[in-house]
Amino acid sequence: MSNFAREMSAEEYRRQVESRRRRGLRRLGEAARGRSGRSPVAHVLAKAARVLRLREQAEQAWSKVVPPLLAGCAFVDGLVGDALVVAAVEPAAGYELRRCQGRLERQLRRLVPGLRHLRIVVAGQGMAGSEGESPAQDRS
Image (cartoon, rainbow, N blue to C red):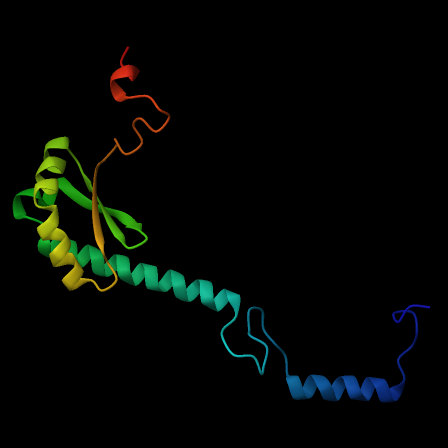
């Protein structure tokens, strides 16, 4: 006979109730008492909050360090690991940004802790050639 089929004695019921009173109710994602650390849900949320704060800091820093002539031609496209990805609207703007990439990286590192690299891409051309074909082959 399984444990589910038998009836609980009054003493067993009283022990279960006392045990629940001592432990209290746990909410979803709450770490068990007596264990160190946070729950997996809290860990994921904290990591997402750190990434959002880093991106916000990076966007503010980018607006401070971008050359005024190129400010309207480039925007922050995202974060990949410790690299800030900046998309240039036109290839010429991408070329100009690459020319001063070293200086921009140094300034961004000073303003945003945790940021190490600056990656410059041309908007809309990030995936060209990803299947092994060059853009010139696509025109034919």
